[in-house]
Image (cartoon, rainbow, N blue to C red; front, top):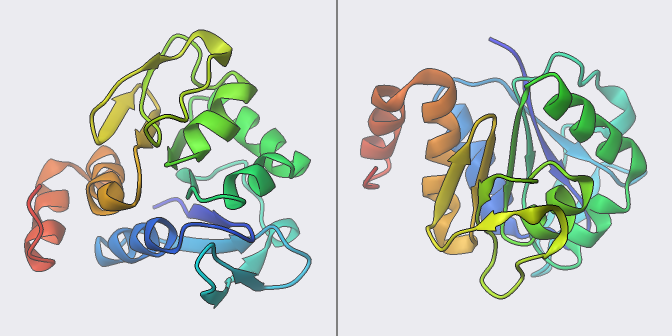
Length: 184
């Protein structure tokens, strides 16, 4: 199975980032956490510091299963300010690779890059970006082709389980959810 990458920037939303990593690993998916900082330590929006598995430049994203963006402010603005990450996201989307973003990241990262143009997507309520002619919805999670978006921290588990379902099937996602006492 291909490796998935979850990107961490200072100010990331801890619940969203760590839930994705946890749920995907419970499903048996290889996941690497990536700091876009020049060091492995990344501090979230609520003061939780984590040590990422790797620095951005340590990885080759050309054959990734998923590129996953947690939200948070200033996490999402810090992600979109990372030009190499934006290039990797655009290349992943161009080849039909899977991209996922939650909370502020669909609006602040994917929409300005054009990845959500003419797609169904969700983001944190009130942050809908008019760029790119996005069809913003009001569900917790949206799937449109190779892109999964989520609306915020309370949707972190359904968002992560949807990523699992898109890669390994709904049955595997339901199995993981059951072990977490989570409905899916």
